[in-house]
Amino acid sequence: MFGVVPRPLWEKKIPPDHRHRIPLALRCLLIEAPNALVLVDTGVGNKESEKFRDIYGVDNGGDPTRLEDAIRSLGFELEDVDLVVNTHLHFDHAGGNMVARSDGSFVPSFPEARFVIQKGELEFADSPNERVRASYMGKNYKPLVEAGRVDAVEGSTSLVQGVRLLLTPGHTPFHQSVVLESQGEIAIFLADLCPTSAHLPLPWIMGYDLEPLVTLETKRTVLERAREEGWILIFQHDAAVPWGRFKAEEDAGFEPMETGETRG
Ligand SMILES: [Zn+2]
Image (cartoon, rainbow, N blue to C red; front, top):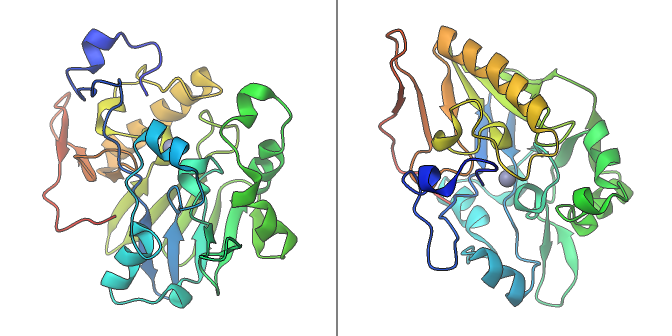
């Protein structure tokens, strides 16, 4: 998760277990926009093998996963989700797009939703390159494409009132973040541009990133603007800090925000 950063540095921020794994959230974002209920990313889902779940230490039990339980606990039904945005199609972000039923068949997890994915990411996910291929699993998105349930978008664009998609390349060439605007505040769901608050320093970039030097420049641009304009930063993979923002004073660091309950 920390690429070229030496372990003596990163293990002080997030200590690993005896199998060298660190705790990570697979946080999804549910947005109550004025005219749509929007879900950003769907976690790892329930379609993977016992071996896979052991390797990654997946803890995602629920009905059928923690994601659906969390949505219901907020008073919504799965049918209420209008749009699902995938920041990219890696298995820990799009794995819950399709769900395995008890008879072994796979169906879309959100029966009424359209799935919003960058056109370039859809094409890139079909890359035959072995390094790229390992993180993509066709079962998470191909059935949706075939069923005509995908809206392929190109570049940064407005999604619905108050919600904007922002192309943030580097982790993958067409990775996107989601920018929210409400009541004079701006928040950004960074996704894998900056997966945890430990990744805020510009060169702390994941080994998973396919174009780390592109990530570096995207981070520079986005985080500079976030600092200047006081954006709330939302971290998808940070097990301890769901969100926060830069402190107002010059060169003061970053401050986690007091949070209500966060789930899933
Ligand atoms: Zn990720």
